[in-house]
Image 1 (cartoon, helix red, strand yellow):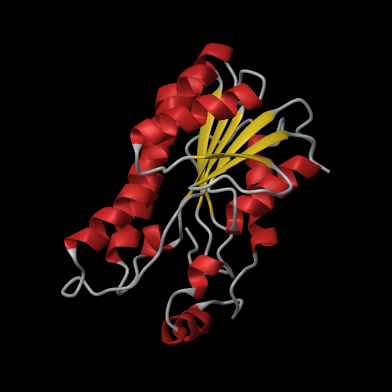
Image 2 (cartoon, rainbow, N blue to C red):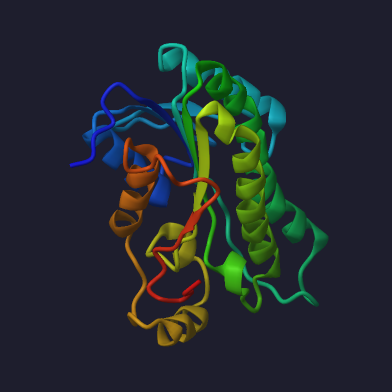
Length: 238
């Protein structure tokens, strides 16, 4: 069992889906975990609330999380996200802007309020949840694809900025996973996607979370810099 004893972790988007599975696994591995969502929730983990698309909200929530974690954040997971469907011709500017605000700009906001502390303590792990669709594209999801492709590019750039400070930044690009977010897309889309997958099925969150545990750990995660891991049922083979 990979251990994270003595480490602290903030999981943005940790109140459900992949983020919640990562929070559970990190806790089992010995980490001190705080989860963040739009609303504080009662549950297994201590939580703070912030809106990732609002920089001021993020600043306050990160400060609260840092206090709960004893003054430092060792590991950050960015897992907040939204998903919807529309062709480019039918997509509204509001739909486009909201998706990029949450799925891409939100990653920037949270990172910018956490990374300085990691640089100062000369240890950190940042794990951004992207998507395999950010690599291969998808019809009717150009806004989501653009955001997730941006997350992958942002991850590489930030990794280059901070690796010298022993802050390692990587991404995970899962394939379709059985979550409430994916449940909101059409059954037609899901059936077509299953037919494309070599495994013939979507993943479950417990199959994605171990990738985050590896990236957060020592020595297992020590050589990953700007990488994108792909637990994606074979949908993308880089």
